[in-house]
Length: 637
Image (cartoon, rainbow, N blue to C red; front, top):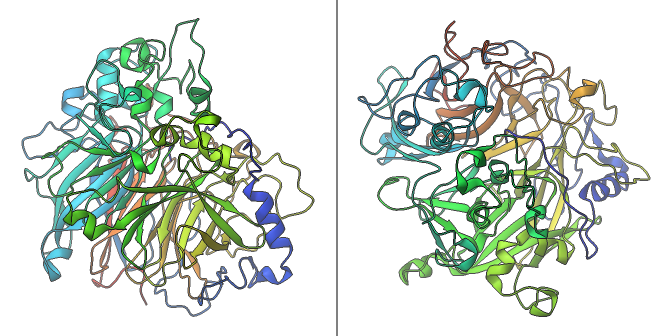
């Protein structure tokens, strides 16, 4: 989520169509879409729920809070009657005897590996205990997506100009996953327990591969055993209780100084380049040099399964049947007959939407000692403007995915999932982000952050899509075949986009995070950044800082619940089973913004000094805990 600089995907080669064209045609063919001042779906096919709209905040709803206003101050705001606690900030020690956080950012790589990571993203709370006890104590799993060299390396030399093996080691230690046990005190506040269950999974943790590509597959061989998970963004939770971490923008860590190196077609399609994202890790560690270790990038871009109650007890497993691309989500569902389903988007402008369907009911797979995530078929979505769509199987030997067309076997299809989706003519989307499945009726929602556009459109609310939107769909009786889709809500700023009539309580842009609570309400986290579309034109100037909104799919109400500090995105959201604590991840406060500038080695607090407010400190990503002062259910009336 933290890096919005994307290269648009090449045009599909077999009839693929840009999704914004389909949205335009779909919306413009239904003039009754202006409902309550918002451009929304009027009748969602197959779904009994009313369409979404942004209701005025004075209209009675089931949400028991007044929307907080747009805010540009360096703080977190929540509705009256709520309280916020910083629970798990970057650099906090995992144990009582762990290395303390240094305000100057001077912790070593070894120390960082025993501290909470940076750039908090996807997260989930796993209860420990039954009933009320399960809402007072549990394991909190936190993904860590990236690092900011200006903040990470201060005290060791500024920025990434002087790359060293120690700096790379610290960058690897700051990413991955944190598992930390947390418990509620008698006064309602939360604390890390410091128990031995706390663990870090980092860029150097031993990993294994399972599915069509096992650890011994030739495409994964480099001469060294595979280690590490990087750029962990969205997440998922399986019915059998494991945690799924999504590797997203891993291509950015690789590069080379070899003037003779030229990317292959597959490397180019996966965004690999000599410059990478400018971190230059390859200059100090050969593992990241594309000219020296060509297969190392093949080990990343997967979904990683972890045991949340014993995260250090066994190696994390990369489930290759789920495909290789910039996974932004791993939303898990089940078919009516118990087959596991995993939805995931490819976070790039023009990225695709994927779905994995297990071959057999997951309970029977477990009984046979097989992983339900190793045996099944990955599909990619093709949308139609009439509101229908198909799931196209990425299966070797079917359609054009044959040896005659250059596809060796199923492992090759999954390793090059993007190219396979290109070949099938899948639909390009505006940066698909997190996906969530409604616990109420099984409808599936996907956040589309934004898109550059540039395609010819006869009419429509937008040419490019700087604000993004949320789509939803419902599966047909055959889960592996068709679906019906529509637009749930278009984000936007009415001051710049007259086609969008969102009221002040629901105005937002760049939806990225989605999560349902147990009551069936949808949390939407936003991620406008300095690199977001049209920032240079100040198209987001009226939206303030990023926010967390709550949408009720039954009534269509969208309300701003929380605003973040300057420079931060609102990423992962999870809660306790009783709904009385909401854990929210605040990612990279203090990063560059169009309005406030950028942090520097000499002034890391130029944009933000949240949460510590220390003159000698720096901003820190963190997990916060939100509670009602009266102990009630979050967001409820």
